[in-house]
Image 1: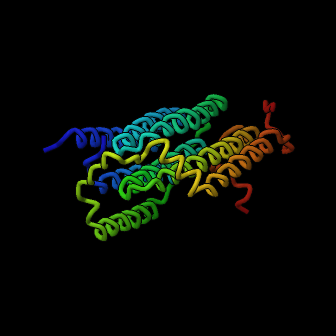
Image 2: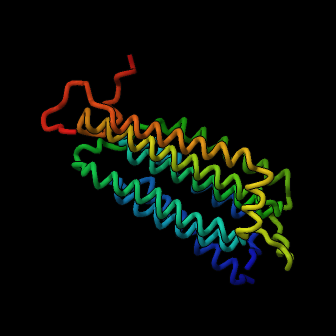
Image 3: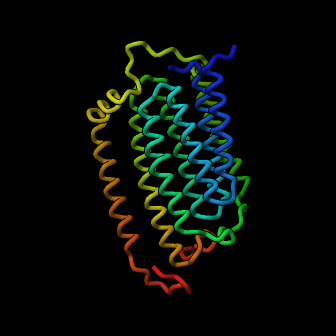
Length: 180
Length: 103
């Protein structure tokens, strides 16, 4: 008997898998980016189904909002000729299959080792604060404070690095028409 | 609203998205698509983290999600800056032409 959660989960999962396939196999980067934005939005819907509301909001704001805007902006800035994109293919499919086989082996072993994974999960207790802003930020600012500080340092270093890269004067011989 | 779908399905979905990302990463030939497929893989891993957080009713998975998106933001910013510099030098972003270190 399929209930509402199953229907929602499987329709979201179908959209996510389809858009992930489009991201991976559409030839032009701008199409990939647009499908990836759809993917992130529907993934946020799945996080709501899991009860992790704050994470869903962050997914839409930071991933779909900030990071993907950066990507689309760079794609538009570069304004690539389709001929400059290069041809696809050329991957060694045997190594790809080997890699995927190993990963799926790990997944199957995990589920054989913990049969609870296949049972329907217990409902959240009424008093549970899982996924709320308060619970997440309390953990983040007490138990995981060093990780929080380190992520701030990482962001600062990335900012400095990007600044250094972006303002560097190009010394190599320039191709015709390059002005930067 | 809480889920009644078994956690195995969430993990399999996350694995499927990760596979698409990895396939795309290995077959694409331009740097922009490579970065986009990286983001797809990171998003798939995030889905697994959130699933495990819900499974153990612990906020640790959500915290790891924040750390991963921090790294994803840094990585995409640095990668895009490098790509723009590469585009200034070579007027394309084909990775086949980036052989200066290949010896």
